[in-house]
Image (cartoon, rainbow, N blue to C red):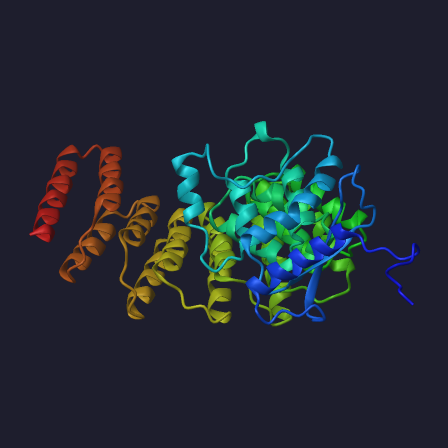
Amino acid sequence: MNILGTNRFCIDPTLITVTYCSNLLCKIYNPNYSTTNNATKSYRFQNKPNSLWKNPCDFDFHKRHFDSVLVRVSTEGILQDVVDGNQKRFRWNEIRDGITEEQKLAISKLPFKMVKRCKAVMRQIICFSEEKGRLCDVLGAWAKIMMPTRADWLSVLKELKNIDHPLYAEVAEHALIEKSFEPNLRDYTKLVHHYSKENQLEAAENIFMLMKERGFICDQVILTTMVHMYSKAGHLDRAEEYYEEIKLLGEPLDKRSYGSMIMAYIRAGMPEKGESLLEEMYAQEIYAGSEVYKALLRAYSGVGNADGAQRVFDAIQLAGIIPDDKVCSLLIYAYGMAGQSQKARIAFENMRRVGIEPTDRCISSVVVAYEKENMLNTALEFLMGLEKDGIMVEEETSRILAGWFRKLGVVEKVELVLRDFATSTSHQRS
């Protein structure tokens, strides 16, 4: 029986032609290609509405042997679907002409190992302008056409952050709504932290609320970020609110959470409350970072609270932090502001005993302490002793001495001090 001769069976010549061309192209780019190869990836092409061939066909192209020509052909049919879904039409066109030298330079600096689909969207972002439409349309089209993975999104975000691109935050926000990005809690934390650094409190708060609306449960990391943000902005009440939320988690607080709240109290001019948290940390054998100790010591030193400064100085040593010249200078300055010259001198000598070279700031702090107690002769003996050891006073100490002599009305001694200072400076330079 001649099956081909019956009216019930017919082969569409268009189907044969297209299938033949498809297989021919694949064999050209991949000699080992087989029509029965299961490792191929299927790309569907939709015909035009007026096509006589009603059924769509599947082209099988080998996954690892795409050519740029094939990619352009395969995405053309998909583009129409993407564009039609947007309110403002966006057509994905490769960036070639009409770009500035600055944009060309930025494109040329893209990482060599960055995959092509990531480079494609990076070129679009670098050359993007509001006249071209909305950035969300560009990113949405990229997501539908090139189907990026989470690794691709992270690669793009990392590069935008590295070059400090102004559209980083907008791209990061859009990524949170894309399924292919697979957003997690830490992605929201990074964006909140970014807005925090830029002092964009409202934007950070919006991302935080959006995260909660989407069902993510807050952890200590993101709540600490919120405490740190409001601490820097000087909003103590908001920082305390988020700090209380951290405590409600029922988990042990880490040094970052404690440190952020201590800094909030320091900035609010309440170092005593910060010190109480420091003691709470010490009871749990948790030690803050050196920057927290220095900030608290500076707060006490600035107001002349010598007792508070000494307590913090002792805590620094208990935490295993070796005091440097700046820490010692703050302690001596606290004694100087309090007018406790004897303790200031003891702290100064202790510093020299452990091998720390005194700075002019340290010397001037001792002189300030002597000035407050009106001990001019002792101050001069102190300075002459340093001179014998080869330590010369510099500008700050000379300025304090000059001011002290003016108050006493001893103009000639002022001129002498200034002349000696100029002479010693020239000797040091020679």
